Length: 210
Image 1 (cartoon, rainbow, N blue to C red):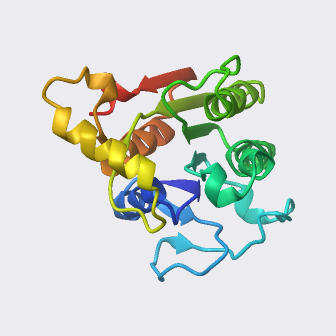
Image 2 (spheres, rainbow, N blue to C red):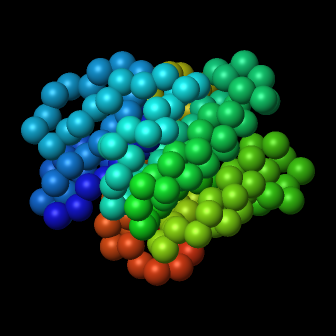
Image 3 (cartoon, one colour):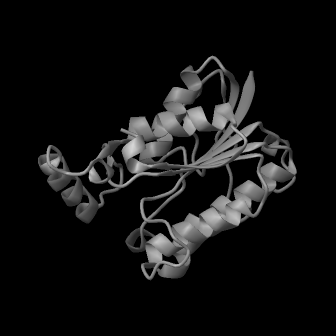
């Protein structure tokens, strides 16, 4: 059985990944570094960390696979620089540390439109992260690019929630790429990709997640 590191376990998609991972017989351990303690589970190891000062020498970095669902908004982060720290720098740092300790696979919850050349700051950040992760040299790397994500968030995102409602209403006539993707479906694909560890770099577009 495998050991998996999940960062971003308290977010909408991260919670769905954690639920599925803990129920998956292929996994012996799920490592979830967080700021606050999670509910106990026999397969869960939950180190409490300060994400501004990650413990680079911790033995729990030695996993088979990594799933990253870290993400915020500029409004919540407070600035573009703070957003970039959460959505680019931290996922990349996690990748470097896990790879250094022997991880083979990394699956990222990215975003539709990710492009390092984009004029849109959000899309450019996601694209730069994908580019920089690919440069690390993971044996298996998967970028999951959902559009609108369906589910109940702990932190309200009014604009996104309104877009989700409109998209759901228009779903019968919308192209599949622009339909709402349930968080559970995204989690399923992240987990499957990380555990399969198929060699090379793979991109799953939003319509492939439905």
